[in-house]
Length: 298
Image (tube, rainbow, N blue to C red):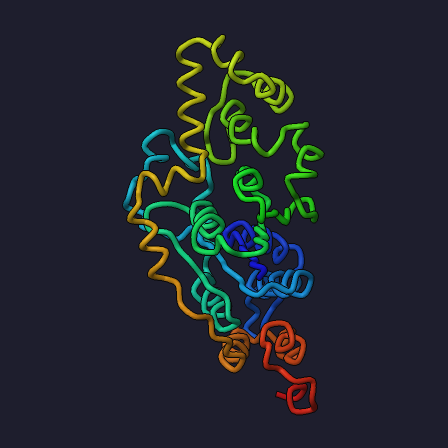
């Protein structure tokens, strides 16, 4: 069994920028491009990898709750919230479209999509033959070490990252050292400071002999590294909030493909690019589709 596990927010941001460069205007002159490009990218991934299950994890959670990462640092505090509103303006439509194609969508309660994806790989689908995580977020590299059946399709490198080839993309840092590497270097995209003047090269050298180098740090720097390990470890959220697991499990339901509903959603947005290719979308997502004249017309 093969699972496609998609970082929904990461893919949505990428397709949002695609839509700005390649707009898809409907009859109301509204740019619905990032709905079209988002769904089309998942179709392309499914055609390439032919997975049995598709999961989409979202950073949609209780905004009033301050989790352990936000308590430790101004986690993701540097992000442009105004732009985020525009990126996510079609979320409800995209969610319903994904579900009508038989995908299982998950949102968090106290954590983020990263934690959901880690949980899917480690708990819910642990017996899977292969998990393919789709994201350009390097935080998932630690999963290559934790789960031998998990690989990452990088949206930025357009390649499959594995425990065997990951050092080609990480300054020689192995998957088993990547969490330590990020803890030393920090992560500007998440507003997490690392050690002063520790970039990729210096951090990569540091983790090759981590214990010795860590012991030589002053107490304040050691605390920074330990704080970052806790924040960045994708297993930590489940330890801090074990009730979050039940929140995820409550969202599991047997996927049902409803192509009629999917095309209705597309028609409401006037996505003629999809409507004109019904047979291709059916063959990609509906295993019961037969290549007969009727399926080509409906």
